[in-house]
Image 1 (spheres, rainbow, N blue to C red):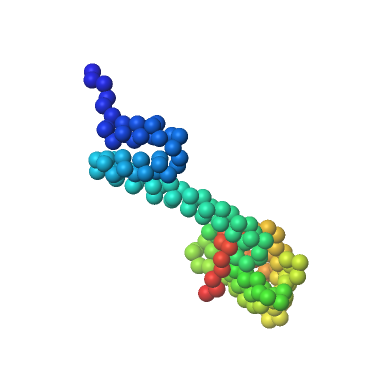
Image 2 (tube, rainbow, N blue to C red):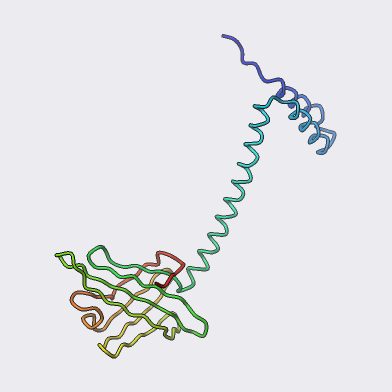
Length: 185
């Protein structure tokens, strides 16, 4: 078995680094750059591949920090898309907090019948919101929706679900924020 041979460029870098340790950072940089300039193409390309990886890692960490702070800000806002239910009975609530203590909302609820058809109801409006609570009243057919927001969640209460959407459609329940952004259809 033959002992492993180190590339000449690696030996030169180690030698130059050891001999110039006391001469300052500038001399080290120039010695390393001279040695790497003489290095074979495979070593130089390996060094180039390493450099972007380090900056990518730094930018990923910066993105994580930005995302965490953005998520913290969005957790305090009621703006977002909320979901509740399952494939047979479900609801989607979209809310955008507006200036002047108001919110724009769209609430869609459905119940899927055993035969595959669906009954559904929808409510949309801009209403006042105070202390993370809001009330919407519809006169024809008559029903009232109450919204109570907490961190990344909302509880909706409907006093007359049969007036909201018909047979078995009930928008009442606990909603979980699934997206911080909202797009109204």
